[in-house]
Image 1 (cartoon, rainbow, N blue to C red):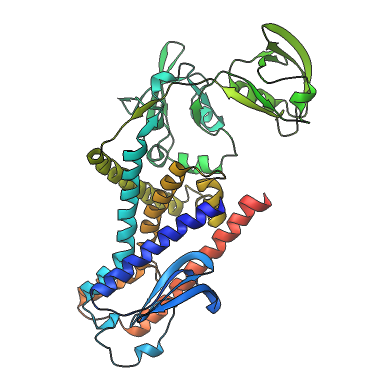
Image 2: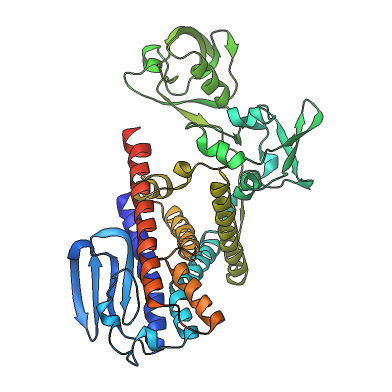
Length: 438
């Protein structure tokens, strides 16, 4: 988990900073330092001097930096700005060249995201669950039921368009968008379900577990956890639960719901083993669990293959939709529809929720591509100390046709660094609260 995160972040930071470095060198600007991760308080893992540039790895994996001569940046090295501008300094170059240097990092991140997405489509193809394969309909979680879904609903269309793939139902833009409505088949009738505008916030606030829609599965028991209620009740792998406390069980979501409703209770249970119906008593834990791993029925998936030519527009489309989703999500955070604490995560959240505990190359590359696009978007935000802040002041300079005063740049750099530091502290604190203490 941690190794995946470090490898992914190293790749992203290295190429982001290389984007700045390459653009600077293209215009003859001297780069004094090139660091992957921060050498905070002067501490570093290693460094090497090559020519006029010190290359190194810092110990704090929260980003990286290139120190460009003649530029007011995070180092706040104002002494170097007191002398006359030299030909190899950032400040001596035309505004359009400096602008290219500042967008070099996000440009590389954007192209990297497209490249990885395209490579994934080309190498892996795209496996998906056809909507018609959901013969049992959907399992509807608490939030889905609140907005009108019921277990067993068969989704027919979304916004008037026939749903061909189940992943269309769970697309991020559905929850971030507005005026989305589903048509579902229930008991032979078509029902219309309209999603409220604050769906994204409600889903983020939901408890762990099924919070919206999932395929509905029949099941039998797989592994039985030693020392848990299922073992104490005599259940074994391969058994099929038929009834709990008098209620019939056909699907796994029904089992989850019944167990949660009867937490801490002892209830009668009927189950089938080799065609014979057996009975026992089952004591359910306080958490509404009994210690089983289900063997879910296999739903037939399909795969879409992509040629090299086809993979490029598919990768670009996914990269663009990632940026669009981030823009909409950011807007909903500012409007209060999405809680800040649910939307901002640090290294622990990235390692645990995005990369996961098992090393799967498909997931690694998909996560890295997503993070590359997120990094490109976040760095373009007009926050002083981020690339977007520098870009904003360069655009102002190009409009008013004179440089923004140094005192102003230094002042906003301090403000920007304070904002970024507060965001980092919040992200770390939120990580610890959400994933360690809770």
